[in-house]
Length: 152
Image (tube, rainbow, N blue to C red; front, top):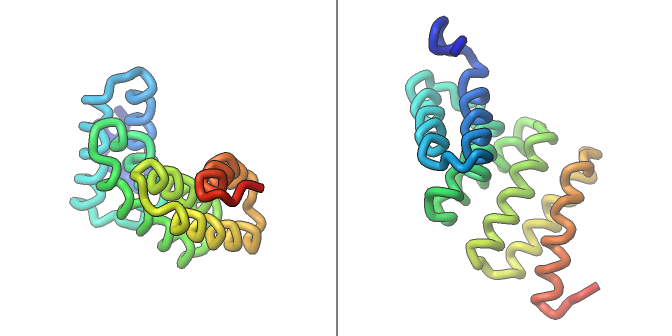
C-alpha cells in the first residue's frame, strides 16, 4: 500500500516479490503470478536491475515454477547467481545456487552437470564462509549421487 500511495522505491520490487510468495503460500497462484509479472514490469520500467539478484530467486524460484514451465525459470536464476558472484553478494549467491540446482534437477537435466554445478557452488560458498543455507542442498546432491551410482 505504501508504494501505491507514495511511489516506488528501490525496495518496492523486493516487497512485491515477497508478497507474491505469500500469495503462493495461500494457494492464490493466479494473483501471485500477476504480482510476479508486475515486479518484472517495475524493474523494466525503472531500470532497477540491481535488485534482480534478490528478486529473481523469489519470483523464478518460488512463484513462477507454480504457474510456468520450469525451464523458463532456469536462465534468470542462473544470471542472478553469476551476478551475485561478480558483486560478492554471498547470501543471495547461496540462495540462487540452491534454487538453480533444484530446478535443474527437477527439469531433468543431466545429473553430472548438476553435480558439477553444485561442487563449484560449494567451493564459492566455502571460500566466502556462507555455508549455513547451502546445507539444504546436501539431500539433493546425495540423491544425484545415488541416481548416478556414486552413493556415499
